[in-house]
Length: 313
Image (tube, rainbow, N blue to C red):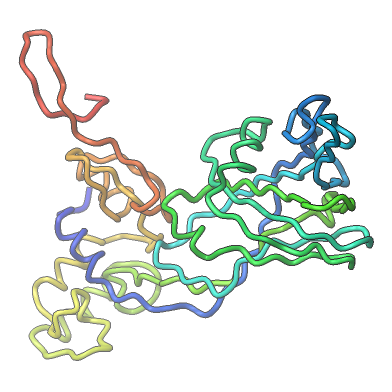
């Protein structure tokens, strides 16, 4: 077991120089989908569900004299969004896909983070009437659609599974293609901060002898940025940089992950560091912003005393 000081690790993570990577693009296809339709008296509400249809018809309901003359149809999809760094900046987020050529129509697209909810009538109803974000869009008469998604939706500390509902606010029908090759996708264009691997001075994606030798070779020197040997970023190479290499000794430089600590806090570290701190590891590439670590609370014991403990304790 290598030496570890999780307080130092937290400070190192916070002080690590972040650089912005080149612009990246990510295309995410839905893992589940369905058409939701009105039924009988409730023709304007999602009452029936047809899962994984190759085409999805969307149109508004038609009520005349209190009678349903045509049921409402909406499309619903669930997209698994990978966790991105909380400081990721998006230049474009779009909901795109294909449709059969036909009349244009005005409508809406609703978005809601659904956590562990399944694709169901209830989740469709909540997304349709209580979305996290909604946009007014024109379904053009061509064979494709391309709608902008509000960037503020991705500021929510929810992430994970996003449900999308497509609604047509006119009497004309719009048919969206939904098979495996032409179904809707989310297109994300973004820049994600890159956190260097602390201790990897020579850039070989591991921390070992060569990194320590590089630190010792610059020991005691003023080291203005950019300076690989100044791991802690204090402008010089000193004992703190040596300790940074020792704390990460043998690391393969996998991205840090969220570690839920025994005091209810969260730190970004690796699996070994989390184990040494007595924490619960949430895998590499996870972030404290998205992980709900157990919080300390009052625990009433059988002897009528009370202690502040984690729930599982």
